[in-house]
Length: 326
Image (cartoon, rainbow, N blue to C red; front, side, top):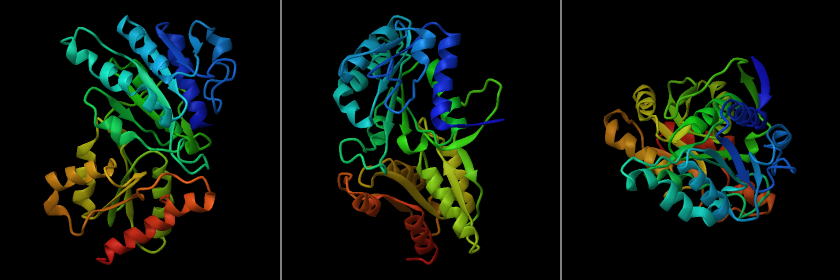
């Protein structure tokens, strides 16, 4: 096992897949000489050249549109969207083109494209660079949505996404990039649609994904010292979602809190709650709670941002309220 950061894991996955398949290329803003907004593609231009690490003008519609067209002709593009917020400029290309081509062609056209984007708050980037749009993409048939939480998951899931024959929206929380973890030296991939129990527990299930996994683990560590054992369920892939894993956890703990960084109203947590209610309602011993961001834009001021974002302290309070019947 080696210890690397999430950022390094992503870079390794891209480099290895480009080295093994000449049809894989990257297209996006500042990914070449600049090496990516946070260094995600550093060194790839020197290794693969300008024909495969393609810098573009500031046009997300052009980035995704060109990538969709190339994928239809047999290439495997990785379209880099600097921030999730900027994906709104390419929504026609993502939702009406990439997601629909296979269906509208009767299966004759595949769109093997990965649309990478950096999402999430907590870094003082304000309302237009901190949003969580995973529920929007998860709502669209034809798209797969991945949100890793560790270096191991980031590398294994990204390699799988690049090899997938359908469009994959791959969302990387910016606060994850410096987080370290172990990965094996040998080749590995992680199948889409398979979650993981990051910490076993018996008293309550915390169902979450991406950076909030680490928030849940921190809260679970504190609660364990008080004799409260929270199970941390990492979805890893939102679409397809590992519903069976969620249900097994709920059957064991009988109590649930769904944790995510998106706004609560119409956030992805609502889908998780609905599936639990539809499938294992008889196992629930307390109302299911959702912990997310209030329905406000993400503020720039750090004090205000901290006030609205979920953290370990808020999660601990939420869990104790559920256990106390509040």
